[in-house]
Image 1: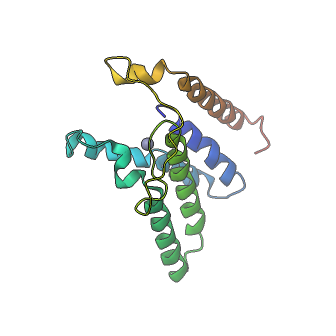
Image 2: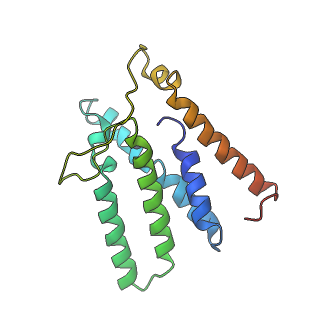
Length: 165
Ligand SMILES: [Zn+2]
């Protein structure tokens, strides 16, 4: 997935928080978390010198995020911070959606460290010198554009008041 993570995160978060009072804050968390796993690209470029596929890093391991969310939920429960629950749910859903979308054309290890099982249904071949063209000229980019268009329509309807959301 190349350009549709944030639009997909927007669509999912919008569905989750449509009836919440703190919608803006939750939406901000959802958008940030929809790209949070790819922050490991900083490590990939700045520290690891591009030695490891970034999907192998901790930030692309679903069980890491699920464990973190459970820990956060537990702390919020102990501290009596009920309002934090919706933020934790939105954050986890957005991160897992990112990893699910990555799973179609990349190796995401859903059960690591316990198993190396992964989906990777679609191969995006390296046909061009600049890796970005490999994504743009692959048919999956049409699906990404559809997600972007859907998010743009929902956003436009919300901001123009034509939706009952
Ligand atoms: Zn990713």
